[in-house]
Image (tube, helix red, strand yellow):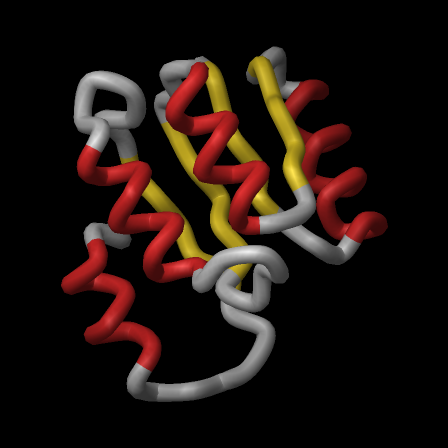
Length: 98
């Protein structure tokens, strides 16, 4: 399974990568929204972990872009919020998060 981790917090991104690779997943890590968009347009991923606080591009726009390329990423996307904003859940779902 190919997983894209888009997380700007380097220690957290490293931890996620290490844990996923221990389970034999193929993991690519990027640290901003533009890198996430570029990576998702170049490679197919089965799963995306997307930080809502990414620099470079709005995370929900990144998610919409990833979802619009269905053959490239036809999988689940999980958003990791930096803050507890209750309005994020419905907006994320409308953008394609599951």
